[in-house]
Amino acid sequence: MVATPPVEAQAMPLEGLYTHFIGGKRVRRDEEPDLIRRNPARSDQVLGAMRSADQALVDETVRVAARAWEQWRNTPAPVRGKVLLTAARLMEDHLEELARLIALEEGKAVKDGRAEVRRAINITEFCAGEGRRLGGYTSASEFAGRFACTVRQPLGVVVAITPWNFPIAIPAWKVAPALVAGNSVILKPASATPACAVRLAEIYQEAGLPDGVLNVLVARGGGAGEALLDAPEVQAVSLTGSTSTGRHVAARLARRGVPFQGELGGKNAAIVLADADLDLAVAGIAEGAFGSTGQRCTATSRAIVQESIADAFLDKLIARAQAYRVGDGTRDDTDVGPAVTPEQRSTVLEYLKIGAEEGAQQVYAAQLGDLPPGNWVAPTVFDRVSPEMRIAREEIFGPVLSVIRVPDVEAAFEAANAVEYGLSASLYTRDLRAAFRFVERVDVGIANVNQPTLGGEVHLPFGGVKASGFGPHEQGREAVEFFTKVKTVYINHG
Image (cartoon, rainbow, N blue to C red; front, side, top):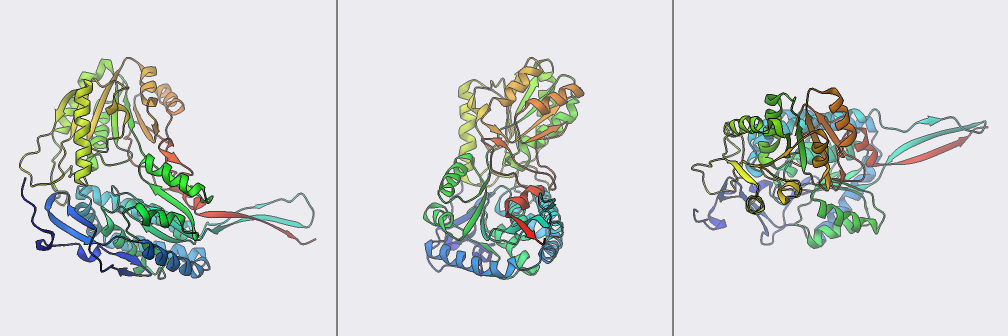
């Protein structure tokens, strides 16, 4: 391991972006930095450093957002939609810059970064259109001379808490519906990826968003994070993160009766039946397991394969995995970047030990080669995994695939459901009856047939069940509904 030089001696290529963004401008605290971010692909390089928020900065940010809301709530919804559409066009103009920022700060391959930015553009475009569809409905009244309808109104100040694995797309799919609905937003990004959040906020500012309507507050949790949740002005919280964090936040907000939306953990399964197109299945499962370094809530963590084709499946899967190039995410020829932090790398390595101790057979582990000091993890495949093993039940969040062999379709469905999570699942088959049984039987929020467990389309709901989700789903029209309140109106004109 190369010795790490002192922080002061290193170049800080993103230093200007390691700030808060409050009231339409970058804000830095002058105190000693307590958040120092190193390049995940080169641990001897510091990307930036800053002082995270304290109670006073939280209070000030909430006040700024509350003042800005008074103007934004009275801006007509179609005009708000135009600001979003302009922001989407600016994201297109800055697509390469944003993709490379993601690759540098988060570590994922830049090609995955480009796909992430495109997803952010898509959701922003969709929500821009909601500005002209925002509203309630009219209804017949049971009394003569009475008009009855509903209207949707914004909540006020809302908080979006986002993770590091999609540092542009996930903030975008929370911020866009919240803004078009007429709320002001405090975005609390993961402390590993604050620069991406600041650039997104600046793009919205350039698009014409008034000062203070979108703020970025970087806090490492603890007192500042709790203060943000407890602020009386905060009227709703949308969080993407671990199940344990989601439960904690939900419990804290419940004391004030504040709405909560949680997109939480996943342990997604892809079922491969004996009649499946193996090439199609292998392509989808490999990308689901190893793409974005396996650091996706919809990543394919389990392959549940019918025994009669398991050996053939593994041969094809390993051959495909061998073609993946592990390296610096900023390189165009990289397929799998590093883990986001040393801590995440350690978590993945610990699960590799657990899998071996549990008796799973490690049938493939990529050779990392000559890489600089960084958070490198090798794409790995375990075979002969049983559903009760920890590597089959617990979220690893790394490029690790567990292959579970089953005798038949019913056993496959049972194995798929044998976890606490329920975000996404896939089935590969040519049997139409099996496909419909899968949709009925597998307890997930997103069911895929003959396609990967990944992603989704922005105009449809995204979210899970069981320990994978709490409250309304994200994206689609449901996203705007979460960020509004319904008022029923009766007008007696008789």
